[in-house]
Length: 305
Image 1 (cartoon, rainbow, N blue to C red):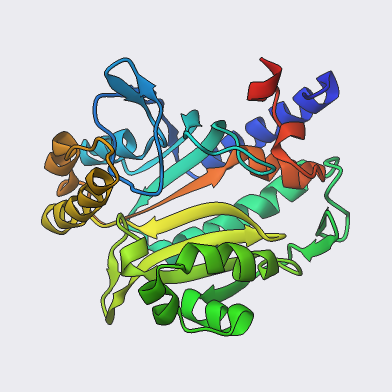
Image 2: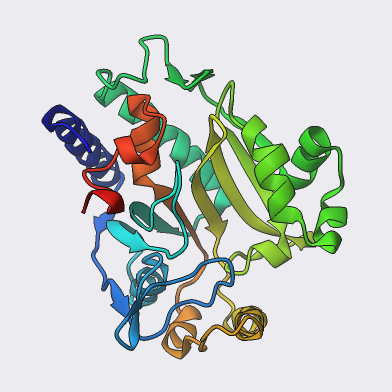
């Protein structure tokens, strides 16, 4: 549970983030937390809310706003994911999500660098930051000097796990190897963008034009912590429908309910070329404060209610 001083520092971070996006020409939006149908994602378990669901991210509604003609939008909101609890997971958490029309995923990587650079200038009092531009978190001292590292998923698995990514996919152990062998080694000296995921693990991201085996998806790691997940967005309704069909088949095979988000697909063709990203606000605050867990970075956690 945060002290009044911690609450003020959390508030300062919220204000600094908003100033970054307002100065960049973004519009802040707010969308419903409760929806009749969610985007089908077999790796995420939603909470039911009577016969609807609490959203797991604001993505569905934010993309529908892009289809209406919005071009640069951001949102800071609470999201809900069942079966997620631990040192850096909570079932209710705060998400920062933003979209920029006309951009691809490399543009978002550069904007992440710019966002953190501004936060370091505006919030030098954050305990995890030093005047030399380094972030101290647990046993890591991480240089935030730009540019940050970029590492493909294939190269990361070879370098840190000694295996080929195709091999772990065939064995069905991608997540296990990522979490145990790869993630702990990412971003320990400087932040790293892990990019070009296998297309099967980027159901909402477009394929690379010159290599349809990989999706234009990245995750940002700092100190071994996954902080953000970004895409060049897939905006082809037919391809997206096909990918959703595969996800729905997996979910139903596990005895879970799932439905095709028809209103989302109807709007998708109107979105146009876009890049979007979700960043864990609580995790960012945890890192900047030098806290070791999310429980220290949030006003309340579920055990305190």
